[in-house]
Length: 397
Ligand SMILES: Nc1nc2c(ncn2[C@@H]2O[C@H](COP(=O)(O)OP(=O)(O)OP(=O)(O)O)[C@@H](O)[C@H]2O)c(=O)[nH]1
Ligand SMILES: [K+]
Ligand SMILES: [Mg+2]
Image (tube, rainbow, N blue to C red; front, side, top):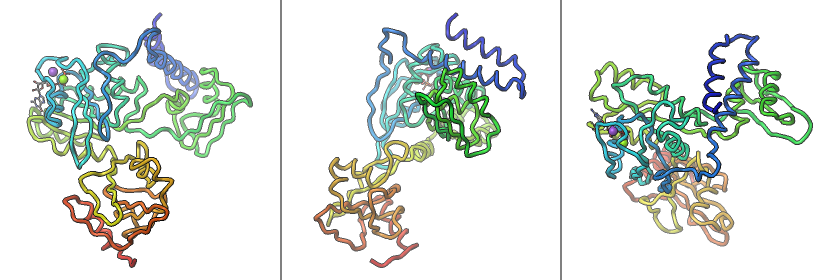
């Protein structure tokens, strides 16, 4: 029997089993069995090079966004509209057969947008080009799940399930569970929060299923069996997802209103303007623009250093590493202007967390800072925001 059949069989057994206290352990074990099989399914077949034709696109810009959706929901139309890169769009399904990259220029940052072939139910098991498409989704910083506002609302659940089946977790934080395999010593089980979904015995059983007999486990939150399995598997990818309901020009206002109220959703039409989508996308990516101010000069507000709290972090240290690899070593302190500063400028160390549109001057060892209040001329919002902040908390030098 193949892996997919075995998964189907266990799923059927789970569906047959009534959920109650007595079956809880058995169900937990079945969940672990499925998770193991799905991981097996993800391993490339022996001898295969993986990837797939046309799907390996080099990363570019300050972040990567993938367009995922059923066929003909308007992904290519959207790519062409947002990036100016032409991607063939047509009324028939599977018009797009490869990954087509475009670049969005927004807020002085560059974001790579990837158009992909449509995926269908069963994609995670290898239907169509599903596996390759999902692999690209996994490599991105944000997924835009494009849905046709005029089609079944079940599509959202079907696609979410497909992505989850291959270890993607949308709009979720990693579970607060510490887990470490050991060589000896048995299982040490601790909690710092009351558990209502899982208990020690069930944890042992799941670990047993994974043939793990020595490990340290600490639950820091009221996590579920699925959370625990995710932590054991360790290969999960936590990604933000915005559900983009397209084609609202062909549905009634009541439907538009209802869809717009779904969690993490936005409604658009490629036949109308989609500026709100860009702003939303940019917000979700959590990018932090930091302007470098050389001593005695104005910062260049057209060329931010772009940091991200999700990737790499946004402290003064991260900023230094972006500018030059020896800068951290040479820095005496940093002067920071902007919303992260308690006063403008604030003398900061490497651990200072920077916020969007902050200005930073790195004062090197054996270099004198110019101090003083900085005012910057530019068309960026940053100077206004810095001035605003100063008004709220005026401080002497
Ligand atoms: N009414 C309406 N039609 C749209 C909208 N956006 C796209 N379309 C149409 O929907 C059809 C499919 O668009 P595509 O951009 O090819 O869709 P796709 O998701 O890339 O499709 P595949 O590549 O086949 O998966 C085309 O005929 C588009 O003109 C929209 O906002 N409103
Ligand atoms: K199409
Ligand atoms: Mg397309």
